[in-house]
Length: 179
Length: 173
Image 1: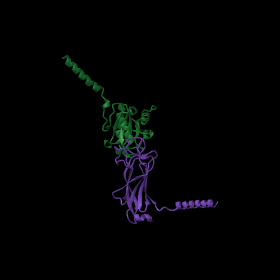
Image 2: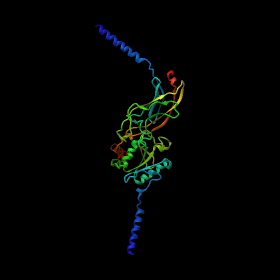
Image 3: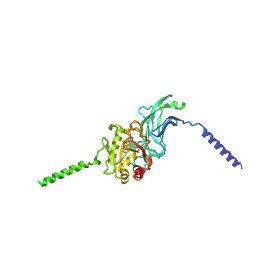
Image 4: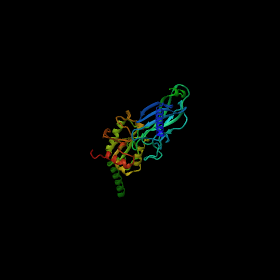
């Protein structure tokens, strides 16, 4: 009887602790940098802190229903000229520095149609994340990124967006924590 | 003497025959390019902005189509568009389904990289995906009948050809 009550109390304690932990503000925050829709694809770009001093810039590309985007790994001019990669890049004048390679939220696959090398993502939103090092300091600065993408279905395409410059304001590494 | 006269008469007859029955099928649409001319059945031409004003060009091409007894159709496409290129590839490969579907048409291709997309250069052609096909009247104006890749599924001839065939050869017209 006593052990039963003890177990009951323990479960209650665990549940209360879990609730408290889930309500606690996260140490690692996200800053929306930009969002726009161009050539029928919604793009939202954000800066996230993924660990102490570690940040990623991520872009989520949402094509129209039934449309897919192409793998980040196909050539910029497409496969035999077909398709365009999905890319999130820093430019030569970006103050932010890449510290890793682009990571995709879903794996690209061999298409059921067209050239097999023309890898496509499943027909839904795709997020690309780029690990970055923010510029030093406490100030927010004007910076720029560039995106490339193109949406097609099995039988139709929207026009590509290639190397679109997106102007953003990013915090300096110290400013991120004080934002 | 008789032999010479006979040869002369044959030569004159051939010349007269050529004059009386010109080979209209050989006429090269100018200033557009003929793209992958097909042996029979239909014509494909490509227009470029350097050729002039689109409205005038379409009027001219529609007249050429009428002279050939073919249906003028504008197609917007692009080199980067896999479905557009899949259709061209099937035609180049002389896919029978596609050749039958295209029979009797005069396809006027416009590359969106050259002509733009829903801008002033393409006048009142409005579309939100390629490939897209607009039927023209004999004056080169849109009839209002349009079809795009959304009308079929995966871009293989077995899917495309029946839909295109129905669009190009609408029995109710």
